[in-house]
Amino acid sequence: MSATTGLSAQEAAVLDGVPGGLFIDGRWRPAGNAARMDVEDPATGQVIAQVADAGVEDGRDALTAAAEKQKEWAATAPRERGEILRRAYELMIDRADDLALLMTLEMGKSLAESRAEIAYAAEFFRWFSEEAVRIAGRWSVAPNGATRLLTMKQPVGPCLFITPWNFPLAMGTRKIGPAVAAGCTMVVKPAPQTPLSMYALAGLLAEAGLPDGVLNVISTSRTPEVIEPLLRDHRLRKLSFTGSTPVGRRLVEQSATQLLRVSMELGGNAPFLVFDDADLDAAVEGAMLAKMRNIGEACTAANRFLVHRSVAEEFGARLAGRMGALKLGRGTEAGVDVGPLVDARARDKVGELVADAVEGGAKVLVGGSPVGERGYFYAPTVLTGVEPGARMLSEEIFGPVAPITTFGSEDEALAMANDTEFGLVAYVFTRDVSRALRVAEGLETGMVALNQGIVSNPAAPFGGVKHSGFGREGGVEGIEEYLETKYVGIAL
Image (cartoon, rainbow, N blue to C red):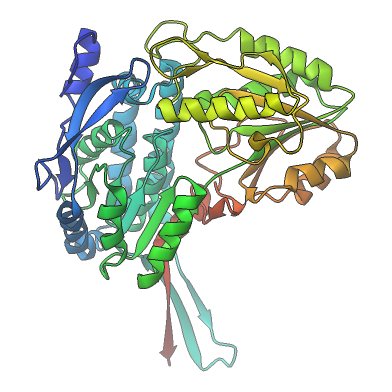
């Protein structure tokens, strides 16, 4: 399937191992109109593969396969569903190197970052393999003693998943895992920039024993045209989307026609709070994780660094030293820490936000410009003195840029942190336990990372409030998104 020269033999072999067709009802097939779309290596700008470009009828075919399989799949024993997920987990771990290389080729992140994502993504399959056998209802006596109350959980039904390009596998497995465990069939539409990882996962799940029609994958460059008819189809019962808030808002509006169950994991504007009593070594280490995981291309990435004015200068200098020491390059190269951004549009957006902040008076401590003539690289950047009106304080940067502003009191820090329409995650560094609890309670976010730079965990509920969406993925809460509650009143 590889479509360009200049690839190593290993790279070409990994690309050639991924079928380029749609995966519908257990078989690979071309798009109905035979259309194809390119997949690009963001480190070089070269086309590395082509895959089928689905049309409206292909989307309907995928939903038909899911709908026809739903009853049979829902009746499958929970243990069997769990064992399929467990086998898929083991296959992902066994093939982590190939999956990581494939991901790096289409998305750009370093191989180390890709391997970390494979481990994280696989863990959702292991977690939900264990949850499949723990789906339970309850039995109780009515208050008047005359009847019995039976509450049961049943699968929601056919689902549509729309996944983003920044975590091509993990954003899929944390939807697919609970759906499989709950007994739901599904159609997955991966991002057009990164369809290869999802197609590789589809083949792996089939190998693990997932029956034909349970999982269907369609890649398309015409997402609105293909997706809207599915949202208006009575056979679809749930939508789960990870992506931007504007797109999520439109999908919620469209899903209202069929009153679908909806889960939305949307944009973020994460504050990273460093108080005067914080352990600065831990805060800088946490900042590197919270900012530079996935090149900053994550909804959980620290977007605003709010630092107490007494430690801001030292924190900024330390962070700039760490950021400036990172090695940029193609993610497949040895020693590379930072790969390219996903495309020219992403790189240019980061440049616009930095220029806006600098024009407003911000100072560049390190970085501040694109790098190289080929690919979509942007230098890791630290800015100080970023004024309140700067665009990057209200917009997602989605790149390797850390803007630092200062505060003087706990109340001021909370007010600044909550001054956003988003509410996904916040990071807090303090050694005062009472302050940590006050701030955690006061933050308007769905998640809080206390004295650590990573909050995501398959065993914990991931999700936000306000314009960051609703619903939770992961944890014991994650499977509830795929279950309906049915009550049966029983006369004695």
